[in-house]
Image (cartoon, rainbow, N blue to C red; front, side, top):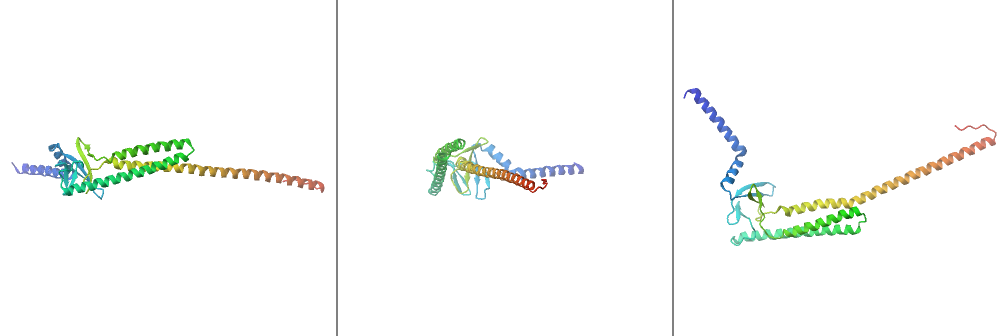
Length: 253
């Protein structure tokens, strides 16, 4: 091979090597993840959220019903913990108790909101607002039933690209159920709706008071104008009579 051929060969090799490095820098993790998904079809997607709201993505195969990330256990099914170490069992039990307390507090909150809406239904006289509040009360009742169902310990798994997927919070060994937190978001939305339902009649009443006050002012102005016109006409007649009595020629300007 001559000198020019060697130069061209080295040039093309450098270009290919540079492109390879760029691809690995930009999409290296995604490529490795794709290979892992292809080579380990029984693996699972594990998503981990930390205290800084950063989400880490792992592709792992559970061993004896748990994943080990940074030396911490994360279980796939909290019901099956008989073969775990005592320390892991205590962590799982503590997480389950916290979950139960959290859900029961939400149920109490929902029940309180429902009672507030039911109280408003009894005091509301407008049929349109009462119908809206009744719909909200039934919706709260449905949310309470769905939230109670979350107290049942079960395997919280989803699916991502035909693979089982689990969502964890760093340090919490049991998987998370999105619907547990969705209920709270739904509750806040309903709170805003109820607040608007409560404040709307007050705003309408204030607007009606303003309109009534304006009507009174208008009527007062009309009456005052009529009285002023009558007084002016009466004074004009009096002046005319005085002028005629005095034998003077009076002209109104």
